[in-house]
Length: 219
Image (cartoon, rainbow, N blue to C red):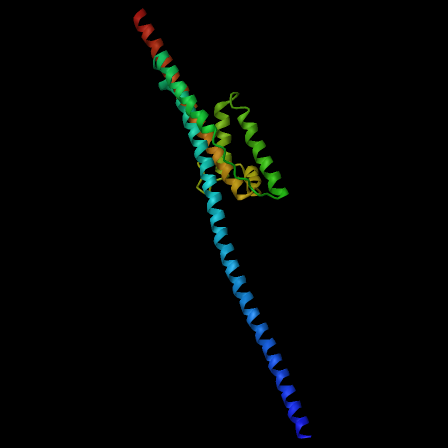
């Protein structure tokens, strides 16, 4: 009888020890899984920062390429290029073309993730700008005014003139990255228009000076 009680106690103790070991094992495994999950999440957070920095760097390279091409183009079409000898102009154009060719060999593309509505808004905004660009030669001054109204709709600064409210509502529907690109395109167009106006003004001034000189000689 006593032996039976001893055996029962021993069996009960063994079961409790086994059960306690299983609980401790589950507890330790749970803690270890939480630590691993936390470390993995921390690593992903750090990688997300690097991915965004990578995209920002690529976008900056895209902008630098646009700026370089614009600067080379402006040099080739500057008034200074028209007032040098034919040989010098040819040599400078060869250098400019070489630099432009080397710039174009660099391919940088940052794709923007858009939903259907953002894609539609981008197409609409692009179409509105293209319609003005296609009529630049018809009326330069009117095109400049209209482009300035579009640009005013893209900037947080106080606009110098009226804002195209319709264009503003379209741009708001675009992805943030596309909004920045639209603004940069308008800035480039307005700079080119300003340079064109300066060239035209300078050319007209030169023509006027030549006419005055000729009239003075005739007198």
